[in-house]
Length: 597
Image (cartoon, rainbow, N blue to C red; front, side, top):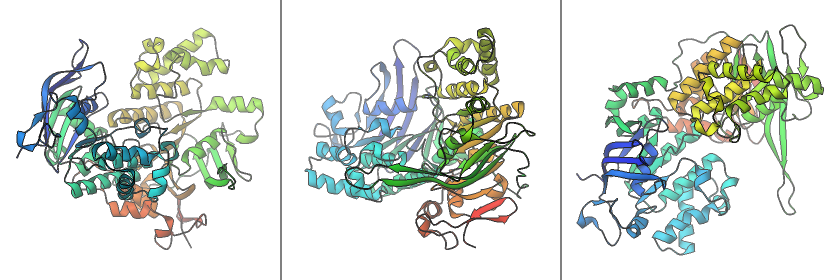
């Protein structure tokens, strides 16, 4: 059988430097899914972009061939046999891009125009390639919006990208790639920054559409759990070269190359728990959130009344000194709002308060009624590590300036003392002090996250709030950052408030877990208790949605859909409508669940 796409000895380079893609070979058949696996910088995306001939201007294909046996327009047809896409005229390539071969890009916000409505952007594919009129194209797009999971297809048609969440924008990108019914879909990290529940639904959607249309899929990812749930063939890339390739069952079941084994070892997994551990004691609490709620008033426009949105409601959390409390949930669940309130960046609604106790024998200080002197001391003792290492460091400041700035603000030491402290903190996070003279753009994503952690540590804080510090990192870099955080916690006796949507990450680092959904805590317990005896349907959905690198343990999409769906569809003991959620009750020592009596 002739492969739909056959890539042979593909070599890509920039200028006169060593090739970044070096003699890569693979093929994919119709109806088959091929996974390109590897860390950032391994050449996965460049390889896929070369298929559509949309490489960066400085990149050059130095050798190899890309043969395509599908339909290629009027000049080439199936009877002529496979054609080399490198030799195809540009007019014929335009007929293929977005039509016969479509691509889902990694970052939907950068791939969608902020000036045009979603419906018009998706319909453009049909007007260009199928010559459809506006009404016919709109009907086809609305039908596709329904299939990709938009609850209100008409509203999605009228919306701009910035009005949608990341998961909804990714669904729109999938609809755009699928609406013309391509023969080959290239999905470049389509779920990297999505919540695990949304990721499971998106993967299920791609699988369903593949069965309906018989298209081939090239899936670019660094997550072996995603590979196990999607792929029949696997190609493992490292530094532009193929390390290992073969059937998914063979590669995942018995990886032969050390690099593949390294990816397996770094992949976070929810542990199999034999029995629950002790309940958290809460004897020495460094941070105490009491009855914290936060509502925002949104302008509705025109003569309509303003809309009130509840970000979090009646949140009670206690963080033990020297321990890690994790808040887990999907985007929009209220996790970051709680973190901002804990830092004093947001004010809770009347009736809520946050208490900070810097020492075991000292008095607790209300964070939101501090004097200016107390607030300065608090800001030195409580620091935050943000989700995006690219935007949390100024591109105009050298690393030394970024590292010493917090100490300058708080008047700590001389200039020489501050430089020495910055160099020491770089060594703490595994970086060379010689890097102080560089700018942030000279570092990888994992190195930038290390810099962000080092910057937060320069003030010798007692509390570190980590907001999704590993969500956009490769699994091996993620493993390094988690190991680093564990080491620093023990070395400096730090307390962590850790924000995440990934239960596998939380299982490794947390001493206690609070699961949030729609602004309320639905379940809270020590990790072992939570994974040994999860009670709430949403907690079960988060656990079920975690992809594992085992083809014999696929994601249970039905369980994910039930738990991540509307609270009105949950089992009777947990069901509620609107904001009338049941109370948080203690089922066993240290195990709280929101349910009816």
